Image 1: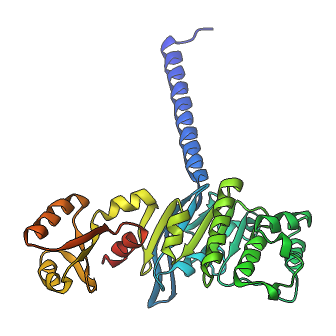
Image 2: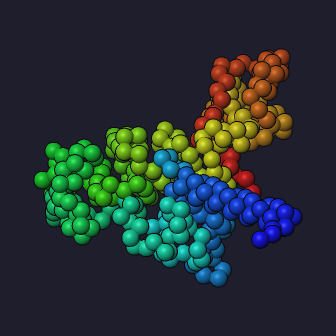
Length: 338
């Protein structure tokens, strides 16, 4: 039998080409799957409207990294609660823009909630039952072993109060019990809407410490919406800022500080009312904060020494210059943008 060498060579080359393309497609598929697995929540151009003339969310695209504490920020009416309701399936999405654990949310309902704990709006507790019985009720509904109850109460520091009626709990204790109910199934993802709303300072600190501990010790990814910027700044690794239904920023805290760029300062100066008119004509966002305090915005921190020199040359009596740097200032800068 005779074989044409040219034909064999061509056949082998085509085979190598097919194998090569197959390897490339496999690699691309692997990269896509790996990228998706890095994010527990992804939305791609999420839109929502309650009516034709009322668009609540417009092209919201976020990526929540696995293992992060992700703060979702915005003023009242920005669309935070609507987004939270969509992520938890309380209201159905108008499209297919939400992916949880790398898969479309709609195709996973309701079984995906074996891996998700959520607390949206006010806690739904049975006030006539004890803390233990509240958890026992949830455990029976979700086929969770009752052995998890005492472990979960200990996690939220309620083990000593487990036999007390929920109506006897303080607001902070009720909030911790509600979080315990969300944690009972040992979720990978925790969705919390304004978890410290209405709490006193001690209650706020308790919830913050609990969330940080859950993230560090249990590896729980936490998505938390809030308007309390100081608390978000203390515990979150990533933030997103939403305003008027549009996403204004998403990234790490350090990326947020770099984005805003401008430097806002607070100046304690004698006869502040005299200086306010002169400074407002040359510097942005100048305002009289108190009898002897002025706030204004410079382009960057490097301008501060020259700015102070000019004032001293004009015989200004300056007592303090304070850089107003932090999440509150960055948040205000971004939400003020048109």
